[in-house]
Length: 288
Picture (cartoon, rainbow, N blue to C red):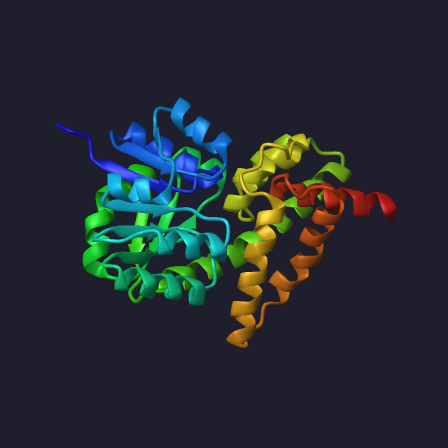
């Protein structure tokens, strides 16, 4: 039987991981990224590297977009026409996605708001959860594809609810990442082996997925293999903050983490993994 083709728009950390898993699941993956290095990596992994968004859309009925900015989604949505279903996985303001949905609907395509829960490292192993929203009929058609790169998916109703859930999820990620760093720094200062502390704490009542995923990086002080770059995370922090303020929802713990992430940017960790907040707290400790 001919393999089903799936299109990937954006072959960065998340997009390339989803593409790899879909290929392992038996799909033919046609991908596009304006960065030639990403295109080469996709081709080496066994994918088909397209030269444009239009070329990807011509090759597959279901497309997955994993984009870095509102501008990228705007340009992408203007290039797609016809009866396509786009699984939009980026973390962007809901108004931006709604504008893209209307634009694509007028062109005959259906946009689903489907942010992902999981880091780049989790994406590599298919350990992602999809927060889907929009047309339920279109969503049902994408389920075989979603199963190809994730371990779970939830349909959350009207368009935008996927992003609303994602903002709540990433609020927790922001807090748990910094709290994991605090625990690792405390354990290290107390004379405990950091790697052992991560293992033991991860088996107790204070465990979190961020401690599990980023704790080992913190224990090794190894932040260069980024699964979420600090500079990209800044975008997510701003979106979540604006969303919470608009709802007048208090976020004291989330707000308290902003200074730590800002310090990571200032200290040269922009392109490092967000686990680098551990380095920030260690540096603060040395100054006291």
